[in-house]
Image: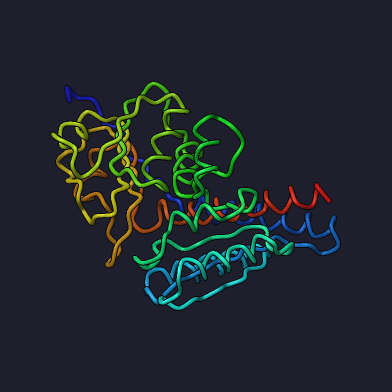
Length: 289
């Protein structure tokens, strides 16, 4: 390095940032309640089946609601429920004036039409940002609740002062609720974005060119540390059994400019965005009455 000293890697601590944001949300919830006869935002979560990881995520979201003074409504349904029956549950929540946000925990059992159920959520209650309508509005630069995890990533980058505009970004993963909205959000922030996936030819070379790498594939340690260039910003949006992500972390903190920890990076920011968007939904409802 010709005597130069590499800048220390920044650990993008989503857990600490989310904790600070929760303090602000607590005050905002109190303010809403004081102005609207004790009205507090309410998030309804729907869990279908008994997947243990999904159950943990739902409990975490309910706990976060309680910490900031929001109400939560947990609906647990058997794995045998049909698409039609699940749509009926969603419709009832759409009509419930006390519910501000609806979250259908992903994934649902294979026999259920998940996209139809996501799209049944009213757009003004789509606080997880999963509907096709919301995605389309976001893609066109119109007002909508953004997909929670990519929105959390963007918040994390912004709060830590990570420059996005003009940089080459690679998103590995093309799901409708993570990879694709992530690519659109980075593009809207003026990054030059390549959207890749497990079948991308020469994936290693695509990742190596990137100044910002986002792992959003859902496969543990699929992205090798050796693929990532020195000085890159590394965002791992994956989380798997054993507390590992989509990106192999080996030696990255010694080579990269910024790295998200797993756990404690992207995950807490997802929940933080979910709470914030539920608050926004409640404020909009109160303002319209």
